[in-house]
Image (tube, rainbow, N blue to C red; front, side):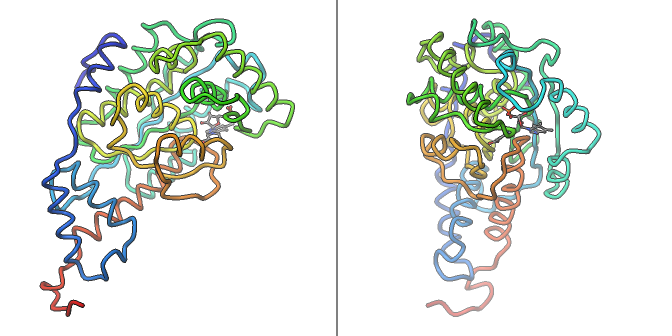
Length: 336
Ligand SMILES: Cc1cc2ncn([C@H]3O[C@H](COP(=O)(O)O)[C@@H](O)[C@H]3O)c2cc1C
Ligand SMILES: O=C(O)c1cccnc1
């Protein structure tokens, strides 16, 4: 489906018009869960996950048959401030690596049987340095949101969005500070591995950028401080919300994109679970703001959708148990 919006206002209206999950299917799944051959609650959060997917799929027997991972890539003018350990050309080089099958996310996608799509967004045209002006024009940010919307396949039943963009932990920190306040140092971290001096440069850049763009409108925060891959992720998440496709959030950068939606429209992330807590310092703080408890905590600090991709396996396991197990009656097992 082609994106049904051509402005930020229309984007917000599209997202706000999304309906919620099927409450009857959720209730039916809760009832079924209570009859499965296990002590009540013994599958812990897997039970909640299966019931949650059931609501979004509108059936008490959900299945995950077509998971999709989409990686958005973008380049950032803020790299001019010396905020990353790596040079910006790595973004395009890694896109080539994704296309050749050589990155971590390729292996993870294959492990969980997920389709993998890579969407480079104007890599030869970095955003503007947000310490000197708005990162994007409205046309640019809307184009990236539309690319995100259009990247979700029509048969996808579980979505993961990931990113590649040298400099984007600085961008995500600026978005988080603009949306939630606090000091820049609360939101900056080591990203690809900057030293103390690099971290101080990041924190200074975020302080100056947020001061230059004092807007509190979440979509203007995305335009002024964000990046194309972050807007692409937001557009794909919005499409999933409107289409009722459950999704798994990845690390710090992905959650910054999600935070824009959550602040723009209440309930915008009802279709999302947190896949993992990354090692980027402020990810835990951001997850707390989103009120999402991570499924995994493996010390990853990669991005590319990697932590969320791992959690595809957890969600698949949850729905397979829920939909494939026998009830006490079917299996002739005595109840308590
Ligand atoms: C080879 C390589 C592969 C990556 N895959 C993801 N990232 C991650 O690191 C970047 C963010 O960190 P910073 O803000 O410090 O630049 C993003 O591209 C993110 O996806 C990578 C980074 C590198 C170097
Ligand atoms: O939290 C993440 O996803 C992350 C952390 C560091 C670098 N890239 C991504």
